[in-house]
Amino acid sequence: MRTVSEHLSEILSRLTPLNPVRLPLLEAAGTVLAEPVTAPVDLPPFDNSAMDGYAVRAADLETLPAVLPVVGDVPAGAPGRAGIEPGHAARIMTGAPLPPGADTVIPVEWTDGGARTVRIDRGAPAGNYIRGAGEDVRAGAVVLSSGTRLGAAQLGMAAAVGCSHLPVRPRPRVVVLSTGDELKDPGEALEYGQIWDSNSFMLAAAVREAGGEPLRQSFLGDDPKLVRKALQEELARADAIITTGGVSMGVYDVVKAAFSGGGEVDFHKVAMRPGKPQGFGLLDGRCPIFTLPGNPVSAYVSFQVFVRPALRYLQGLEPEGLPGVTARCETALTSPEGLEHYLRAELTFADGSYTVRPASAQGSHQMAALAEANGLIVVPPDVTEVPQGASVTVLRLPS
Image 1: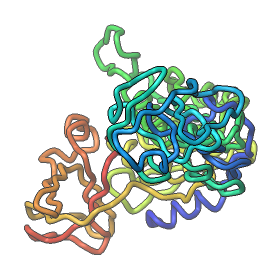
Image 2: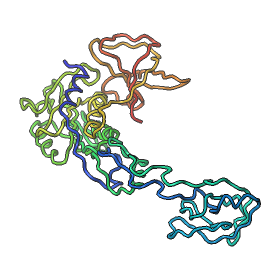
Image 3: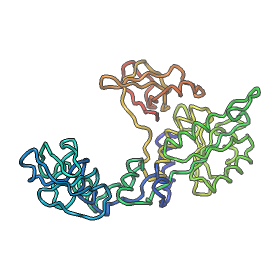
Image 4: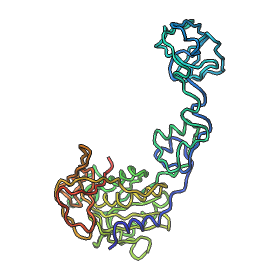
């Protein structure tokens, strides 16, 4: 039986990050930047007004109130660079370029708002309400580093420096399949002995949370040949495949039977609870396949511990798992010796510290406790008892 860290290390050692592609800005949302982005020009590229008001010379406001003739309007995007002579003003809009000769902007609220002449009741030094060229970014500066996840703010920055396309590592396309003759799609009527397929929906959502593009497929039955055929057909569009169920020691463990003796997928017992039976391999020597247990909680915990870091690695990111915090455990815990134990829990933060309370139901089939949890308490393999009030590590679940 291998440890959790050994199994994860084996997975990561066999992965290769996805090749970069160039995508239009909006299609790049959620992907990871493959190369740094630099600014070709200063931002802003010219001195401009930060307010609606009047562009003037500060020296003309030494005596107040000052009444100045208005020589014209300067809207944002206005062509030309007509200057302002001493003793004159131009009505200017937010974002408009500062006319030559002007060195300060007076907000309209400090004036009578005149169109031909303006009375200014309050003075200001040079530079008032002016956004200087290069104040945000200097030409040649790196504005987005390689490895940056591209959200709304990052795409806005790329657009601001003139990028229409970006070199990115794409979202991994992850096919998710459940196995078992007992499964039915939600909404269908159940016969005795049947259950609705929850794992594929849960894992598809988890893939999206981890930055991937889930491709959920209808569940597969318990025929190893049909399972193998279906998986081969998915290779054309998959960057990774996740199956759930059929990897334990039973007669009908179909995924294990489909790959027995083939060498493409290795099956192991991992020293963890839940999630002991695990499998991993490369189909056609390139496509990672994660064969996860069928019990819902086992599948979910296995995804967070093994698949999430792998999907990050495929995107060129550090293969990190869920973020962890240290918390005071509100109740005593017992844990099986030799297994890394993941317990569903409620994590709270108050008065500058975390506390955690384990869920009362910890069976690997009990979904209700998982749906209510926001953390996983991690008990190391060499710890069998955790006293009340002790500090424990808690992984924070996505919310």
